[in-house]
Image 1 (cartoon, rainbow, N blue to C red):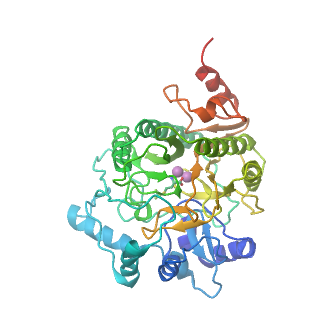
Image 2: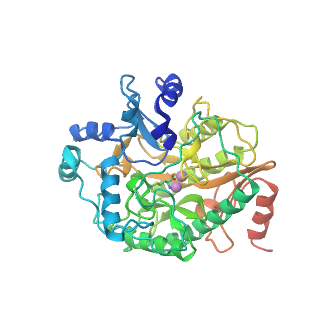
Length: 450
Ligand code: MF3
Ligand code: CO
Ligand code: CO
């Protein structure tokens, strides 16, 4: 993701040559750069969509393919706000580490003023609208290792310049990735148990924050590129990056809770759907289809295969069932850096994203839609919904490739609840933990004893 910020023109050449025609090089996580936001601001009645051929994403950053633009254009992301947040915190805490802002810096400038205005005139596509956010939570335990972006919002490490260059983790790093994955899973299970009618997404966020800290972990979303909360809660038509607020969950809501924990220098990233109260048959079918395409894609993972081929498996499965797959966000490599190579596209593509190899850690996190997969980006610069307001679903694991297959580092634990989509899957019945010997052994232990 930061390749992008510092990678400059070489990256531009690589990306431009292969993606200008095809469409967005994609990924999964960032607010909009100024160029995009400004455009959106001027067209509030005609929502901005991410399939503009001039807009693409790389390891989570939306960029622009305007060939006449300078490198500066790619780094336009949120800088002003991040800097002011940092200054505010420095004043308060005397420059100490951790995320400590209790209040949000007041947005500045013309763009910010426009966004403020837009909040009141914006045409939301469905039933979900932004609520009231509580102040950003803080991490003040000196024993918790904070990621490099915790205080100023800016991740410092660049991804390798070429998209097919992928870091191989050492055995020591894999031990730490496993630990981060387990903590993320425990937090996700705890959050999921709260998904009941009347509970607000902010109450879920408070729990996630506390559960992460309790385990010595930093909740990775907190201040990541300025993200205001400790997890993402995406309800109904929200595709991803929903910000927890005071909206109470309602019977029939479908919610994705996306948790990333940073433990001892490494991130574990996972998400899952939860049904609030009783789901409709359509809601169940959407979740089942999303789950099944995701498991099919994960089953495909083994050394020497191409990352680009994951997308076709997902798209074939869902399009046969009448759904669409989001192109504006993608899965990603993960480790000491939150978002890095490879990019994992969840649609048929021929991007040179490299070959799978033992020691790679990355996510698969398809977002599947009932109607259009085009996105509407909210003025909060994070929340992405479907343009038509129809529902969408997502699952995510952090995966590790081994010589004999793949395993989920964020896989379910013996204490994790079993959901209907796991029991009723046509692809894999019961909890999926991977395809390698280690995963198979664990799955055997999880299966109900006869
Ligand atoms: N967890 C998301 C992902 O799957 C990223 C969230 S970044 C945040 O990649 F800043 F929105 F939290
Ligand atoms: Co995630
Ligand atoms: Co992710």
